[in-house]
Amino acid sequence: MTKDIQPIFILPEGATRITGKDAQRNNIMAAKLVAETVRTTLGPKGMDKMLVDSLGDVVITNDGVTILDEMNIEHPSAKMIVEIAKTQEDEVGDGTTTAVVIAGELLKNAEDLLDQKLHPTVIAKGYQMAAEKAQQILNQISASVDKTNLNILKNIATTAMTGKGAEMNKVKLADLTTEAVLQVADADGNIDSDNIKIEKKVGESAEASTLIRGILLDKEKVHGAMPKKVENAKILLLDCPIEIKETETDAKIQISDPMQMQAFLEQEEKMLKKLVDDVIKTGANVVFCQKGIDDLAQHYLAKAGIFAARRVKKSDMEKLAKASGGSILSTLEATSEKDLGNAGVVREEKVGDEYMTYIENCQNPKAVTLLVRGGTEHVIEEVKRAVDDAVGDLIASLKNGKVVGGAGAPEIEVAKELKKYAESLSGREQLAVLKFAEAMEIIPKTLAENGGLDPIDIMTELKALHDKGEKWAGVNVFTGKAMDSFTEGIIEPLKIKTQAIKSASEVAIMILRIDDVIAGGGSKPGPGPEMPPGMMPGMGPGM
Ligand code: ADP
Ligand code: MG
Image: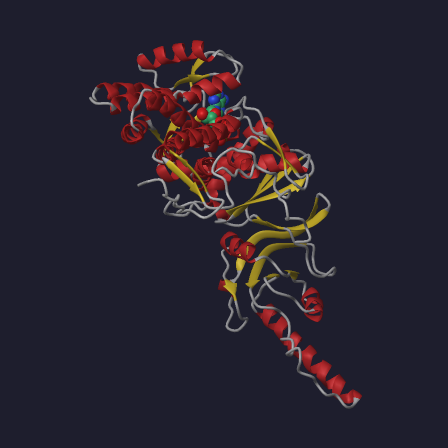
């Protein structure tokens, strides 16, 4: 008998569940929306987005990962797309929009396959095969690069900055960035982007940006009587204070007569004098201290003609060590001149409306500073993001030693070769590989669309050129014609492309395999009537 069967609840109250096709469609839709949002920013003619947060702060950017980050996306599978951008940013530092746009297109095409009743696992298998093949194809077409190919390196930097806030000064900035990256490369060719300090200062224009062969510190000297400038600087780096240790807060010193007080102060003075004498003995004429420097010690240091700054950030201390070749010391005992760092000059200068300290003309600095200038805070932020992208691309190119032409050329080449590969396959995966190939073409198509061109015309032309063996034929968004991207200097690291395809396909496959979205009480799995945050009943500020 069934009439008395009670419904069985396995989920808590308030939980929601979407299953089967609905779950798939819902997830694909959300992912496509994310891709659609950043698509218009792709390429040299991509537009910018203005993002306003809840406090009214404004960010104007063209950078995929920044846009997605600021959007505070909530939908779970849309969030997975945002993760692609973050992975791309961590692994390469550029190509975030590309990765997201490809993921969106892979899912859009998967929808067509679902409509044709292809099972999601078959699509996933085909996509997997295509993604692996795409890596091979890209490797085969790539060209080699090393630190001697200055022109290619500068082109990589310029390409990275094209269409960003740095556009107008990209040649100058590309020169500076290339020089910076080559300078901090160590003997084994390892390059750590942490060793390139990017310092922003509002004022002048991006053209006034400079590379400092050393470090620029957001610090001024501690005492007015210290020299403003020290040539042939011998730099002592200390991570201990130049102070007498404070007595425990609750310890009291009982002083019964003025003589005792006097003796106590004299004792303290002696100890400080001794500390400063120890500093002088090292032969240093510049001191950077991570901790405090006592007022009296400042006075003695100034008297000795020593330049000193205090409370320098730990990260800056490490960069100072790398730039000057000195060691960071925790004690003054047994310190010799070989522990000191060197710099051609250490000087204090007003930049914008603040005093800063330049430690520059270092011999062979393994840490350098790019001082980025720009008219306003918003401009300078976007210039910095562009420079960050260029640094990331240069490092990725040098590490991997492989580059490709840009402007949509590698994507067309991959599509072409994948279509050939599909022909060699039997079974239904073939359809998925073909759709994967078509998805690659979204990059040149979008570049063309964003440039106001007719994507169909240019794609026909480009495909014909690729069939003739012109592997770097890409979209010239300025003339609307085809061009050889490599000879035109539009060059990108191979890693941008391989990583973008890898993470885009991984996430597309992951989303495709989901057929059940279960959300515990409190969160909702899909678009639905949602209350804006802060307007939930019972969530007033008093709670
Ligand atoms: P992403 O976040 O993916 O790096 P971008 O907005 O930086 O997005 O655009 C990158 C795309 O623009 C790449 O496909 C690149 O080849 C292309 N591109 C860059 N410079 C040019 C150019 N001068 N002409 C045509 N395409 C270009
Ligand atoms: Mg880019």
